[in-house]
Length: 599
Ligand SMILES: Cc1cc2nc3c(=O)[nH]c(=O)nc-3n(C[C@H](O)[C@H](O)[C@H](O)COP(=O)(O)OP(=O)(O)OC[C@H]3O[C@@H](n4cnc5c(N)ncnc54)[C@H](O)[C@@H]3O)c2cc1C
Image (cartoon, rainbow, N blue to C red; front, side, top):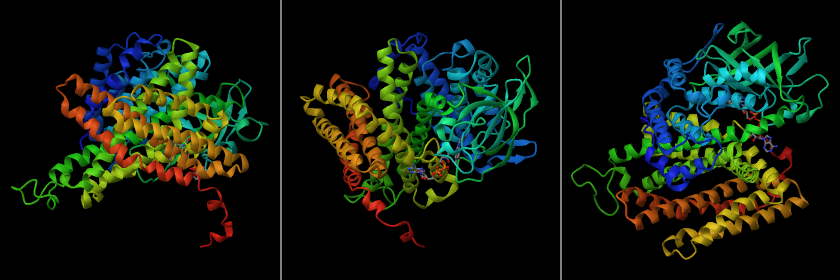
């Protein structure tokens, strides 16, 4: 496994030079503590923890995996101790509500830490990551008593959390879930059912686990309108707040899976477990939507992490590994052959990974700023605009980044040739670990329906216009900049085409609803390439401006411009294939009768 090195220079580039974080934090309500020095110190400390503690455990987690016994689930060597250090360092409380022990820092800073944690060791990072989901749910919908009992413990990190949605027969379609919640005389509920694939459902890293469970009340309406949300702790809290008697919830077994071996994926049995309702009856799914965007941005980070880790590994390797000579003559005449980094095709793979990792960082941090404004924007108008933009960007970030992040992890393996397929280098682990990103938290197909159906067509294109307007303004402002022309012209063109394609798909969908499903994944991927074009053009502008001003970091800024150029010439053209395919019509998919799919 390549040793993870936190890309601090690029993190600072995106935060400070591209997205102007200082000004952004100053514009938020109650973010006075997020001064540049403070933010810098937090990121430096986080980087140290990720490089020195989490990264060395990544391969250990993969090799050992988790083990189940009647007494519980044991996590891989070192996971528990690393978690203890994480808690002692105050990391779980960083962005949480100060009324319950949190430090109240902006969420976007939390995302930077999540990026470093997730790249260093995704399996480990999922334990605190899932707690974050439970924390957000209780913060948004819990009663004061629930917050005092559970939120404080989740925020301190003493207890961890889970999200229990999926059942054996349903994942994407939660409307059909069967877990039952029957009212008890004391106002609590008896929860009965089986949940599968529950990440961090059982482990030995914390003294208690707080499960957030979706279940149905007796007589609840069918479908998604009859789902309620419950808190079901592994151990029932005592009067003094400590973890007490064992509740009737247990891990029946662990799933054997392709990757993320260090994270326990559990079958959870609820056998009349005691639970408490959160939020209104039958509004469980609506409650979950309130933090879905944050959770999905969290998963998008997996795509960024996979690309970054693949890039770091393959960059070092491509400078060391000698094979054949450069086509234009030896570049390492003293050696028996040239390093493979001289070959154009290896450059293609390295630059793809770099363009994906750095573009993904820009997209995730941009989305992170919208999360900050949604929570702490000073005016209602600002908060509403940020919510709209975040809602639009979320399915793109989640699905596009995990798709191209996986592609990048694969390229990382390819750069290593045969050694990439061998475990000791860690590149095949990166591929295996990255694959789940396209499946959980809503598959690519489901995200694509959300983007095209719910976000774009149901708003008559308003959410798309919110973004294309930003692009339009940027293009207009830079229309006379000769140096930026190579980026601005294709950006303006795709921005225009995006709207036209949306209209065409929308018109087709008015005649036949199937057109939405038929176009959706191509539409989402196209949108991802368009968003990246905007971000890469903006990054190129920052870099070009620095070069004009004069800088001691010429190499860094030059690399940005070169990567932007690579993106525009060699990745953006993929959007053309998606454009053509999204208009190919549903018939090419649906005309074939089901029986004809014969084996
Ligand atoms: C390692 C791992 C960890 C997980 N962690 C958790 C967790 O912590 N908590 C939790 O609750 N769940 C968790 N999950 C479950 C995960 O979220 C689901 O597996 C995922 O949402 C997909 O659901 P499904 O498996 O039921 O697939 P299905 O819903 O059966 O989907 C199968 C295929 O059909 C497609 N499909 C379904 N409906 C449509 C449609 N209308 N249009 C187009 N395509 C469609 C899907 O895109 C997919 O390709 C985890 C899963 C794994 C493997």
